[in-house]
Structure formats: C-alpha cells, structure tokens
Length: 109
Image 1: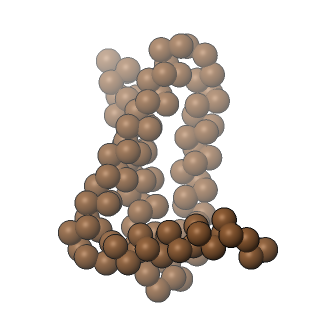
Image 2: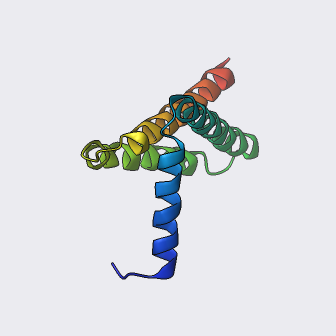
C-alpha cells in the first residue's frame, strides 16, 4: 500500500489506542463499550427492518456478512502480538449477534 498521510495518522491513532488500553481496567471498559455498541447496532438493524417490513432478507444478509467477515479475520488477528484487536472483534461479534438473536426472540412472541 502507498505511504500516505491518512494511513500514517490512522496507524498512529490505532497504536495510541492500543497503548491506552494496556491498562486492564481501560481494556475492560473498551470491550464493554464495543459490546454495548454492537448490541445496539444489531438490535437496531433488526428492529428497523422489522418495523418497516421491507428488506428483511437484506438485513439478514448484511448481519450474516458482517459476522462472517469478523470470523474470517480472526486467524490474522490471532497472529498479532497484541490481542486487543482480537478481543475487540470478538466482543463486537458477540454483542451484535446477541442483539440480533434477542430481537428475534422478542418478535417471536
């Protein structure tokens, strides 16, 4: 890839976030925030598509594709020395699926 200023700033920001999250309490709070945001996103996607009664299959495909991308990135993230990104991806995936499944159970009743 080309060495651009945007790529350099993004890399520095991500490295700074990893340094900030070296503290276990900060890492735990960051994981909780990511889990909660993913839960709200998963719940919102299914609620909005269900309320509008349009594009239900499309919302399911987007949810499945997002989860599949995160699962496919897992081996690459495991090879890294810092496992923060692996934990963040797992927290996002679990929160997102939990939001989708919980909304499905709620709509089933």
